[in-house]
Length: 223
Image (cartoon, rainbow, N blue to C red; front, top):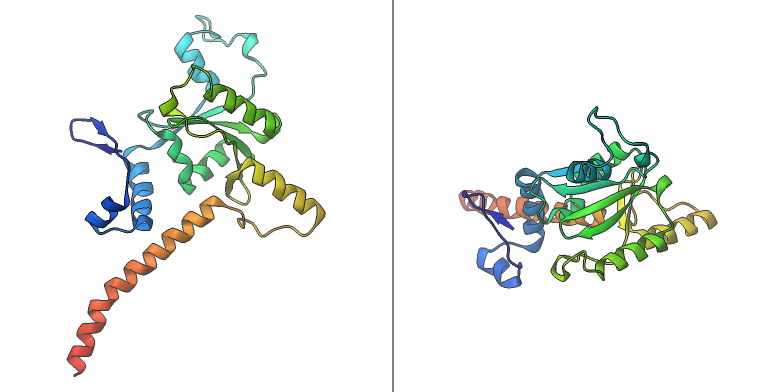
C-alpha cells in the first residue's frame, strides 16, 4: 500500500515481476516495507473498551465515571495503524511487538480481527486456545466481516521474555515439550527471528555488493 501527496491510498499485490522490474530482492523489499510502514503508518495500541465507549458513548455518564457493568472486562487491546487500514501487518515489526509486551505486561494472544487490526488478550485473562480459535472462525464466517478483509482463522501468541511471535498451537506444543524435557533456547521457534535472519542476510548482501567495485578498483591500481 502506498500513500500519495493527496493523502490517497493505493494498494496492489507484489509479484516476482515487480521485484524484477525494480531490481530488488524480496528480502530487501520486506526490510524497506517494515521500516517505511512504521514511519508512514505508525502502529496504535488502544484498549477495546475505550474504543467501544468512544463509539457508543455507553459505559460513561456525564461526570466521566465508568459504569459498573464494564468492570471486570478482560483488558483486550486493539492493534492497528493510525489510518485503520491494513494495520494487522504491525505484528511483523519486532519493535511494535516488544512495545505491546511492555504495555500489556505479560505474554499475550493475538486474534486477527481482520486485515486491518488485531485483538491482543493477556495470557492470564484469555480463554483456551481452541476457544479463541473458534471465536475467530465464527466471526470470519459471519456477516460482521467482508470476505476480502479476512486475514486468517489462526490464533497467535507472543512470549514477552523470549520475544517470540508464533502460532498459538505451536506455543502449546512447545510448552508441552519443555515440561517433559530441557527448555528450548529463547527465540528458537520465532517467526520474527526468521524475518530478522532475512534482514541480516539482505544487509550482508548489500555490503558485499558495495565493496565489490572498490575491491575491483584497488586491484586495477595495483596492476
